[in-house]
Length: 414
Length: 153
Image 1 (cartoon, rainbow over the protein chains, first blue to last red):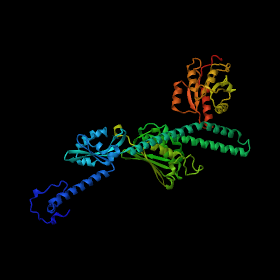
Image 2 (image 1 turned 30 degrees about the horizontal axis):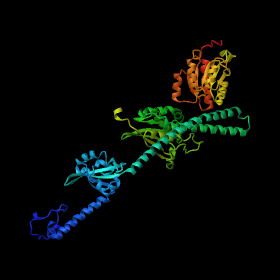
Image 3 (image 1 turned 30 degrees about the vertical axis):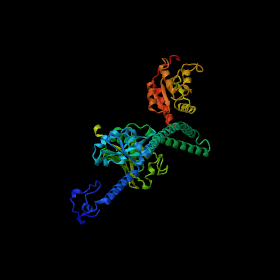
Image 4 (image 1 turned 135 degrees about the vertical axis):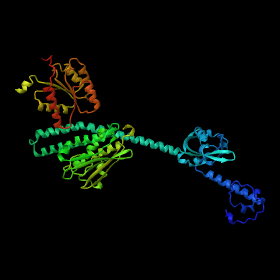
């Protein structure tokens, strides 16, 4: 459109004679006036109107969704090609039909609700947040649809435009995903139960092997030849190592299978209990363990004790020469507590940070430090069972900080 | 001679266990702990009840001073043996200790509900097992006062 300010003003007729152009804008009227007369003008106007309608019709037909316009009586007044394809009707069969024939439930309620909304509110509704209903085809079969409604002002009053998307594929994918999640959950539970049953049942025959090789060693050491003594010693050592592994595997699988309900628990009491359990190691190493302002948290108390015991125990075990120090502290972060267990021990090279939480992962030789390498794996599993995260910060020869989060006790309960 | 004075009559223990390895291990441990203890054994619950009631082939069986009972047994399990012993007017005064690998709370609770006199789990290590048998012998066969055996006296 040309700039009205620069347009020549040559038309002598009064403005009231102007034909009304419902699609026209407010600008350029003076400039246009000169041409709005004679058969050429009407032909041109008709062409323009036709072209305009064709453009809107084309837009409607090209829409990827079925578009249906419904009047206030609930009858279909306009449809596009996708509507025919989706619902299996010919266009003339759909026009004049009650919308409830193709969308049996939910549409009428939405119609009323949506007609009362402002246009802005209607436009604010995005397709992704549309409501899910069921569409019914001509042959009676049904399919899931997502529908978005918006009011449309027209000369016949307020109409409702419905954009309808066939979501069969998405619904099938959602159902499949749910199925897979459920299957994964079942598989995890089975795996845990398997680990538990296997480690439990393996203990029995292993106890026999271990007891009798020990009995052999005790009664016959020095009475057979030196090879026999050596072989028996290896058998005894292997059996007792396997007993520790199986015992630890059992302890690990118990975190998931035998855990108790989370309830308000004093982490201060848990730390104290862990220290009682670690008394031997603490006295032997002259360790100093401090803790301050420990909060109440939502936890399985036995597991919380084990968690502190494993972390404080590690701090004492992997010490550097002089008396080890371990500090336990807590800080509130939103609805969770972050708890730090910091030691001044050997520290861990950052390249091993991922490995240390794995099962039976060890960074030292068996001669250097005893243990199967399950401690941190159990600690991590306990934290995860409490919905928390577990991280480590460490520097070789400076010590480590193990940080985990636990749910705080809801205020109403304190 | 002092041993004879403390145990004028040999103590009889009925060990009910289906694992030959465990039975032998228990015998060995008792031999070290107290050589005057006579171990009798039954490898399932039915055999154990026959021994206690002196039914064939145990017609000449002595009344045991102590029963060591495993829970998981073929034919009749330890829970049922325990229930029957404690329901029997004559047998219920015999101290019955559960000696098993299970440390499940459900088993522990059920055993005490059925009037078990004790519940111990078999430790994994040989030293610990021997220590356990020593303490069972020390308490139940030496220190504890037991009802005298009317029938045998």
